[in-house]
Amino acid sequence: MNHQDPALLYGAHIARRQSECDAVLDAHRLDHLVIPSGRQRLRFLDDQGFPFRANPHFLAWLPLPELSDSWLVLSIGRRPRLIYHQPIDFWHVPPSDPAGFWTEHFDIHVVRRPEDALALLPPSGARMAVIGEPEWALGHLVPDNPPAILAALDFQRSFKSEYEVACMREASLRAARGHLAAQSAFAAGESELLITLAFLRASAQSEQDPPYHSIVALGEHAAVLHYQHRDPTPPRPPRSLLVDAGATCFAYAADITRTHAAAGETLFADLIAAMDAIERRLAAAAQPGTSFVELHERAHRAIAELMLDCGLARGASSEALTEQGITRVFFPHGLGHLLGLQVHDVAGHQRDAAGTPTERPPEHPFLRLTRVLEPGMVLTIEPGLYFIPALLEPLRTRPEGRLVDWQMVERLSPFGGIRVEDDVVVRSEGVENLTRDAFARLGASH
Image (cartoon, rainbow, N blue to C red; front, side, top):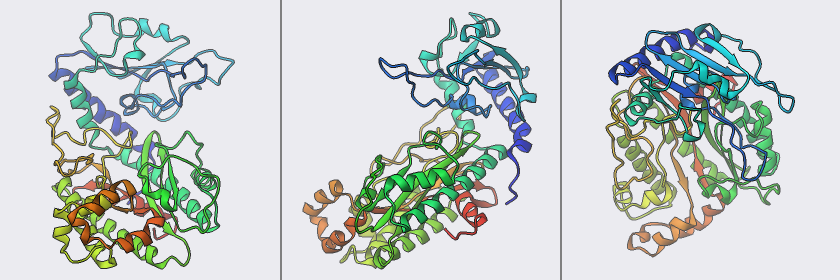
């Protein structure tokens, strides 16, 4: 794949955004779409703020994730207007002067105070929609988020431009560097805290930069799907490491997971290798026209076969393991989700621009994506196998629990679990695997 500079693709991206936006406004008889970038939120009874990241609908147009109190105005037949908040501030570094590849596509108005934007925004009574949080209101500009408008915008965002894919390709490369460093830190016997710092350093990020809270889980901590801590003490002996961590480029995300076994842990290493092979097959099957629900069900069948092959299950077919819900105990989450400006990107359950839902099957309540795959979608593929006490104990007492080798469960539980996750682009001619390509560019076979 040609690794183009996102800046060279940005003009076509904005032209596409303008065409799509004009169509939405015309269909709903509106003159303006107004999108605030957002406002810094402070902690209760404190002057310290939460980490700020701009409104994703704002970021769909502008690569300015740290720009607060600014406004984007989109009007039919006009160039996009950006009211750019640049305060005079001696407590913090204010935004720099507007500069870069994006500026030529906008009419830019710099304001020093948030309220100065009012004179540049559509007047009260104008036919407009305002997209954002209610607390971002400014005068008569109160976010109303019309459901029909949001449905149309979200549906558009589920198909990525080549600029967006290029950003995600670069984000994948940054994240892959971090994963290789995390693997090395694990091999050196480091703690979760120091492995996390190794990931951040190699991917050139601060703690606040990644697109989501990184999961760095040693041993049994990997059984917690969204493990949130950073244990400063390394376990003795080290057994396994699961790292689910990403990076961004111009606010677009990479979301990568890799699992590693400590030296000498051959049984668990073989399981990781088997899961890696399953993940590769599923990623390659993310072709146009494929139902993601069916792909998720295919993952369950593959995991059932793995459980039989490694001795975790016995006395049943792979079909019986899936039909009786046993694989859902060991693989309780969905196979993947749409990816973009948000890690769990919008419109995963949306069939069309009108917002028609595609419901989750009752037996798979945690699926974040239920659509038929189409060219332009970017999504994750992330099968797993976990040993979660809260799910295993009820199974142990049910009749179908006899199909599980509980001695093997006890043997593997200290490793926590396995997840392998790649980011893929659905293309008309097949699948582009951003994650595998990124590792290959770094000379790694992950």
